[in-house]
Image (cartoon, rainbow, N blue to C red; front, side, top):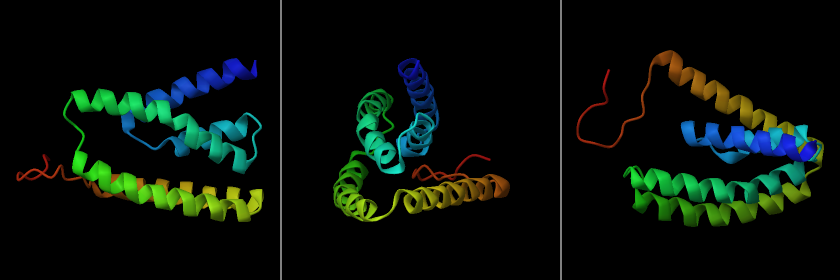
Length: 133
């Protein structure tokens, strides 16, 4: 039953990630916690589980011309150093502390998204024209 639940949660998270472009950790870590993993295991598993999602999502979005390759390389190389540093730091924290920090991150993201939606802000596409109203 756990395997079926994991596949269903993974499929739902994949649809949401593809639809909204959200990072896997926001979706996969809580799902993996529900499946009984501790915070360290959930975060590490999420990092690896997101690889197929990233590959397929990137391939699909590339076909639509939505990827800015210059940004990909800058963000990608920067995140390599960040994930190593973050992993080292996470291993030094107790699972409960790490889980509370993850909860604070989730709340901060929700507040920021809610604030933008409340103000009606739109992300500028980078084109020379202003965003549509």
